[in-house]
Amino acid sequence: MKLNEQTVLVTGGSRGLGASIVKSFAREGANVILNYFQSEEAAILLAHELGEHVLAVQADVRDEEQVQRMVEQGEAYFGKPVTTLVNNALIDFQFNPATQKPLEDLFWADFLKQLEGSIEGTLLPVQACLPGMKAASFGRIINIGTNLVQNPVVAYHEYTTAKAGLLGLTRNMAKELGQHGITVNLISGGLLRETDASSVTTDEVFGIIKATTPLGKVTTPAELADVTLFFASDWARAVTGQNLIVDGGLVMNG
Image (cartoon, rainbow, N blue to C red; front, side, top):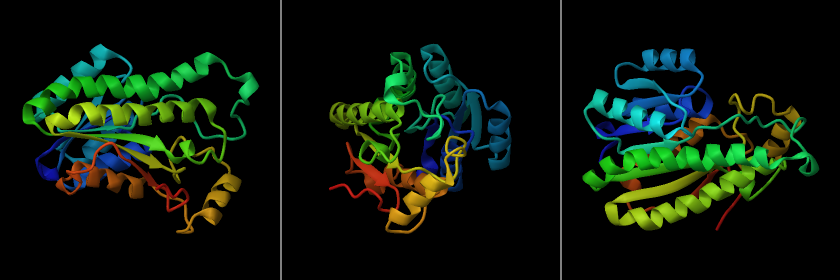
């Protein structure tokens, strides 16, 4: 299915990487459901900027009723089921090495918050979109991970552990859903320059990444966003269960 024939749901789509993903799909002519949680003003402004093919809808991706209502609203507005889902929402986390808790100060609740954001916040939108994807015998599920799983430059324990779990969920979904024509893949970005979550990252950390990355630069949200187009397109029709690291070559994974 061509990108301009698709309806795409992007969770956490009002700011940072999510906004770049929304812009990438809108540029290709797709219908886009722009999900937001708290950033109403940013979401409405972005939807207005991009035009009638972008609909901003509020929902907490950890709330089953809100997620179901969001999907129903978006599908009714565009008159088509969601064919591509990008699970991008990030719940209450900033990449700040100066304030990251050391291991001995972490609570299980810190891990639960990130597990709920990464796992529950992926599971519920997938479940809401599956009926339409199965009926169409076509679907693209794209999850956003991190290269910190392979290369923990900073020990963001709770965040990285949740994203490692997301990799496992991605591969299990790929195994089960392939029979329905649905692919499921993970894009693991490096630290991006710049999003709201990385705005507090120190220049020292960015400098380390730049100095040790083959491309000699820090990846931007727009560069990672365009990779989601590949996984949503017919070009990736035979690719599923994969973890593609998009970080300028910092982590090379065989």
